[in-house]
Length: 252
Image (cartoon, rainbow, N blue to C red):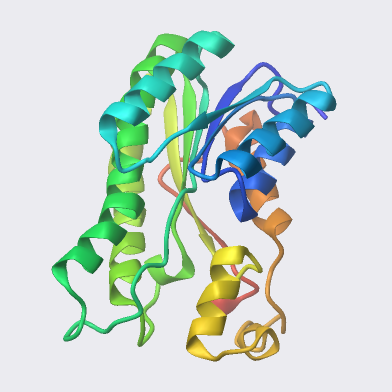
């Protein structure tokens, strides 16, 4: 129950899916949680539910692609909770399904703005607070498609590959500050985003589940518990690593 006790955490995209599960598990393990999202009703509900269980939690309306909005929310969260120790860069979109010869510049740029610039902006403005605290853990949600390729959604795959390398670079840049940076690479997890992607592509949950050696898709808590591990001092010697939570998908 106390794996992240005393740590103040930001989770982006925390109103739904994986982000919500991360916020809930971190709060259960003693963390104070700042919930960043654009889904106000759902985000406020998550924060209220956590507070009802005795956790410290607050919701901020934040577009992670807007640097000024990110800085304002990060600084407010640091003031609210007395510092920052954990950042979970989870917010992301799948974006256009168009292939490289079809996608427009605007469609490409929107995916990079959320999935790549969002990680940049949140990390950029949280790191000074972690330096002030004397330590920190940044956990960047990439994807199995930050590790291997697939014949679809090129903008999304490019963004998740970028997140993987950004994690390694920052791990090396900030190791002396005792700030650890790692990437998490989920397989197909049953979330609203994945559900929408499967509907758009005509795929089924069972069919996609069969792509994983374990024979099924993952649940949001499969990822959230990995995030708790990386947020906690249990992983104090882990930085620049790739944690694949993918039912064996990338073991092929």
